[in-house]
Amino acid sequence: MGLGTGEIILIFVVVMVVFGASKLPQLGDGLGRAIKNFKRAVTSANEIEVAPKKPESNAEPQPEKPAPNKPSDQSS
Image (cartoon, rainbow, N blue to C red; front, side):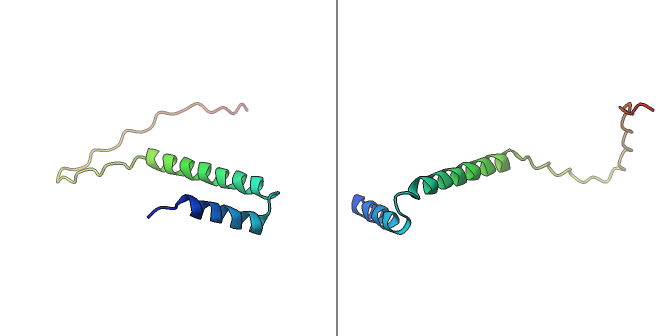
């Protein structure tokens, strides 16, 4: 049960009457931006990787190695 040609034309006529011909380009631009932002958000959400859970074991945890010291960029 999709929209037929008659229904699409009727919707377009109602939109023209409600918003007027001068506002249609602004409406289309806003709709295009919204779709673009939605696609960008979906893509970035798919790129986020969830770290896999580490299996729990009865062995004692090994101490972490200290991070190497980075030289500071500040000159005194």
